Image 1 (cartoon, rainbow, N blue to C red):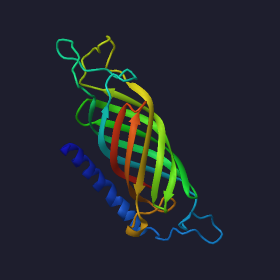
Image 2: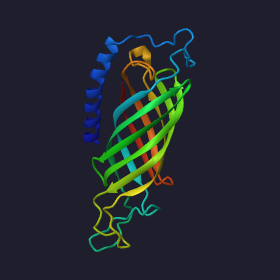
Image 3: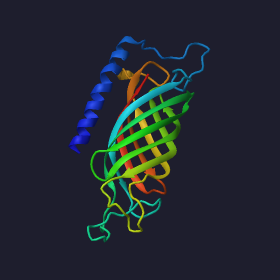
Image 4: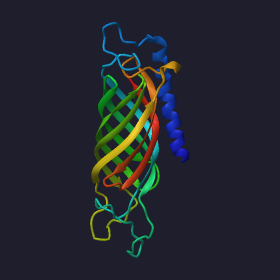
Length: 219
């Protein structure tokens, strides 16, 4: 967990400095002009917002419950009882939001690297949809498709299959982003800034539990 905390702290420092620099130099008024469509809080209703971010978290998968996720084996070939593929993660995301008045839609891709435990790599894409909480907050659901690759397995699973391949399934999640303009974090229809994101995702038919926390920088 020390590695995860350090990675998230470094990411926060790297993204916070340019975001605050842009906020200091950018106009502060993001209100809709007379005759212009407005969100419920009076900010601009429409726009296109590309963004990227870094997140950290943890994931645990169920064992032998669909999608071919294998059990780990002992040296004698017996199944390791109570073993569950899990570990801490660092995730990069890249996507775009399209605000539509009080709601928004969007799409993003992600790449995940396991720091410890038995998750090696993950990658995937998802669509997002939800509500705007003022101009700088979001509450959303997401659905997409995810691929996962594990390490630390024996070369063969209990049925003789190759455990180094990717395992794939539909992914679902819910989350929220917070970036109040009152402290200089610009809105999704305004100037560049950053928000804090917290979300929880699952893999397949609730085959995993993945809470994540990080920083999203938009431009």
